[in-house]
Every structure is written in structure tokens, then in C-alpha cells.
Length: 236
Image (cartoon, rainbow, N blue to C red; front, side, top):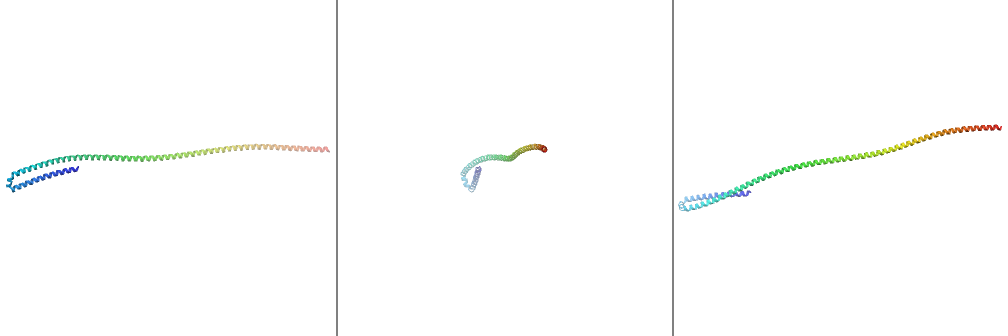
């Protein structure tokens, strides 16, 4: 866009230089004519009409050239104005585009900040979730340990109860055996007492029988002695 503007400006400058050159040529030619007129008044007087015609033709040519230059300059000015207007419109459009780009950049920056904030919040939420997960896993592990400990305690209590039951059964069997042994001992003691009593009674009976037998033996011996005495007496 800057290149067409520079071309227009160059054309305008060239037209201005052309007009100035033509004016200088006209001025120099006029001065030359004046000098020639001063040097050769006689010849100028003779050639005045011809020179006037030539001058008029030259003036017409110069005027025509000037008119063309002015028309061309006007066209160049119009082109320049149109180019400037176009450049101004483009500058305004570029300004609007830059402003729009700035707004879009700001919106993108806000979106990026919102995304970063969202990412930070998500990271914090994930960290919190990870912490809660670790805490839950720790709680589950603690619960598992407590359940295992409770199961172990219950198993130990069951084993202890089973051992206590076995011990109680053993003690009960021992008590039963002891009771049976004590009953048997009592029975045996009672039987022994009965036997001892029977033996005492038998001994008493035996002693009485022995005393009775001794008495009978004494009585028989006495009777035998009496009989012997009686027999001896009869024999005499």
C-alpha cells in the first residue's frame, strides 16, 4: 500500500518539476526574446508580427501544456486524495483489526487465565481427592487391621473358650473320676468297715466259741476225770 502512495507522490513531484521547468523555459525564452529585442530592435520590428505569432503559438502551446499539466496534476491530486482516503480507510480498518486483535488477545488471555485457574483448581481438587483417597485407604487399612485384630481376638477367645471348655470338661471328668474314686473309696471303706465289723463279730463269735469249746473241754475233762475217778473207785 505504501508503494502506490510513493508512486503518486513521485508523479506529483515530477509534474510540479515539469511545470516549473516549463515556466523556467518560458521565462528564459521571454528573457531571450527581450534580449534579442534589445539587441536587434530593427530585426524585431521587422519580425515582430512573426515573432508575435510564434509567441502566441508558443503561449498557446505552453498554456495547453500547462492545462494538461494542471489537468494531470488535478488527476494526480484526485488520485492522491483517493489513495489517501483508501490509505485512511485501510489505516482505520487496520486500527480496527488491531483493536479487534487486542480484544481477542485480551479475551484469549482471560480465557488462558481462566483455564490456568481451572487447571489449578482441578490440580487442587485432584490433590484433595488423592489425599482423601490416601486417608480412605489408610482408614480401610486401619479398619482391615482392626477387623483382623478383632478376628484374631475372637479366634483367640474362641480358642480360649474351647480350651476353657476342654479344661472344664477335663476338670469335670477329673471331678467325676475323683467323685467316683471317693465314692469307691467310701464304698471300700464302708465295705472294709463292714468286713472289719464282721471280722470283729466273727472274732467275738470265735472267741465265744473258743471259750465255749474250752468250757466244754474243761467240762468234758472234768467229766472224764470224774468218770475215771468213778471207774477207779468201782474198780477198787
